[in-house]
Amino acid sequence: MSRPADLVQGTLDLLLLKILALEPLHGWAISQRLTQVSSNILQVSDGSLYPALHKLEQEGWIKAEWKTSELGRRAKFYALTRLGRKELDRQAADWARLSTAITNVVQLPDLN
Image 1 (cartoon, rainbow, N blue to C red):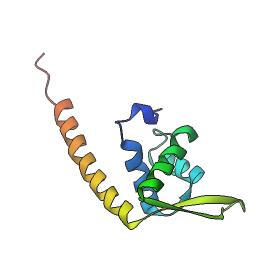
Image 2 (image 1 turned 90 degrees about the vertical axis):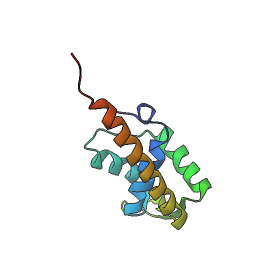
Image 3 (image 1 turned 135 degrees about the horizontal axis):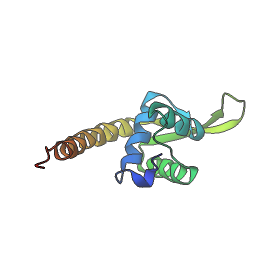
């Protein structure tokens, strides 16, 4: 399984912004959604998730609100802000350029 440390630096922010663009979620649900939509390939530990969420909140890209979870417990729900939507669009465009460039190199035919 890939871990955030195995990903291209900065990718975790993009992944979290994209997950939160779908709907507001609490931390555990964000982690589960990432694992689910990546077909169990991507997993994020609490030690990486919560500092990243805090950073995104400090940047103004997400906002947090205490609510009652589906299990009846209080949980901090995170939601994308308008500024976060702009950042998501910027990071997604950057990722598309980078991943296309990497794919072009990896798909070069071997001379052997």
